[in-house]
Length: 114
Length: 118
Image (cartoon, rainbow over all chains, first blue to last red; front, side, top):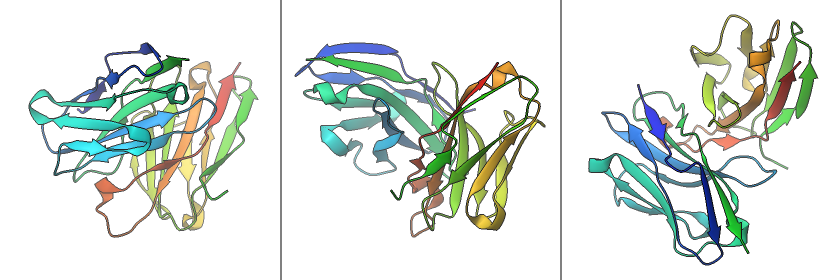
């Protein structure tokens, strides 16, 4: 069965610090990978997604993620965080060919201190 | 606002009561999903509709749960004889049917309905 692991449950950073959130998935076939974000009081929204091609994908608000197939990883990065990046971040996968149900990780709560 | 809407946003009920939630997807989105999110967890898939057809149901969806999507527009999720373990955020998402393969479609989430069973 597919599963997603997010190693960091809580991360606290100061503004301008660099961010890397880990995500590992378990699935033997071809997967599609997503990062969703939930800002305080708002609903889940897509940050970025990877299906194929260049393993380095860029999303909104300066976020990027790198797919490393050999490590089953899809880590999220941002060179310099802002206070407005305070949110909960979810990594998700689905399997190509299956229905489009998403399997989510447990989420990482990021707090950026001004 | 043209996003996914859900009603009610909050529901408090007593154990054993029935509750019904509604989801209105983005206009012309043919695919609709229900997820459940408990505290400290990510959303978990419950069920999926394409138009009015319910094509997949999770094992999480016990006999007390039923979902419908009459006419392929809005959807309802009903929980009968609620239990305290049903307390969660119930999320609805929709995605368009277009030129992309199914697995490449972006799901757009609504604000959720938070259920508390006392």
